[in-house]
Image (cartoon, rainbow, N blue to C red):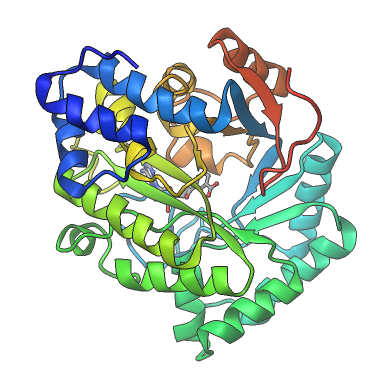
Amino acid sequence: MNFSFDDNLNAIAEKVFAGTRLSYDEGMALYDTDDLNALGKLADFERRKRHGKDTFYNVNRHFNHTNICVADCKFCGFYRRGRDEDAYTHSVEDAIRIAGDAVKEGATELHIVGGLNTKLPFEYYTDLFSSLKREYPDLHLKALTMVELDFFARFYKMSDEDVIKKLRDSGMDSCPGGGAEIFAEPTRSRICDHKCDGDRWLELAGKCHEAGVKTNATMLYGHIETTEDRMDHFVKLREQQDKTGGFQCFIPLAFYPPGTELSSLPGPDGIDSLKTIAVSRLMLDNFDHVKAYWVMLGKNLAQAALHYGANDLDGTITDGGELTESYSVEFGEVKMSKDELIMLIRNAGFEAVERDTIYNRVGAAV
Ligand code: V47
């Protein structure tokens, strides 16, 4: 393979071609390069080695059962206090109606996350999941982050194993990757000091994997974190994946400042986002999939990210309006039709493959 990298990156390129793991320092050097095209080519090499032209998407719907939260994260524009006028908690009936609409639209997955709400009993969650499963047994419930599981164990005074087992047995099929934010201290404490730390997030992910529950992993970037913090995040995720192997995909989440306590920050620019996708693809050598989450990247940048290491555009998404209000760079409703997703993928020169949540193919590539 012939790449015109800066001299100091040629050695890294050779390691990528040989399939050798990159070090922390090599990851830092990749972030440091101004040669975006060469970095993209390298990440694209890695992506095509694994997936060729295949680019995954799924038909899903987000459901946020409550926006009441005691965590007060500085980057979050979604949470409300119980006394706020627009605070809400959905009933099981609401959930069934919303899931029904999603199934009618062809959804294979319901992505369920919410705030840390001290007014709800643990049974709210087990009832929610078992009721949804009773009505829609084939709908995959990708539900609850490690932060929520940690809150449940502490608040309801249950063991981690018990929390995971009871939720899994009631219908939780897998877990989304939220709440990881940035593991490194002191940055994590400065943006979210009321929820579990990075080690605890990783510990719970490991316990889910051991219980047979797959999870995803995210990183919130473009706020107050340093490049060193990002590299620490990649290395810690990679080490956890070496141990328990249950992460399905990595999703870099571009910070969207409006409506948050950090609204004076600019958020990441396009170059930073493309670099982050590319470096994550190259550092996370034991993750099969890297997702370009169009809700936060915007549709156009997410499409470009397919040439920088991403092999998944996530989904058609539809939500009840919460995403639109809280953290989307997209104007208007947060929704993309299957046809539009397929067109974005095909116009980028790839083939679109519908998947279910655990990356089984649903139909042939188009
Ligand atoms: O945990 C919160 C992030 C996450 C903001 O697993 C923000 O398939 C940007 O985790 N700007 C929730 N990001 C979303 C999430 C996710 C999304 C899509 C797919 C999957 C998956 C997971 O969103 C939170 C937090 O890290 N977030 N506020 C914000 N202002």
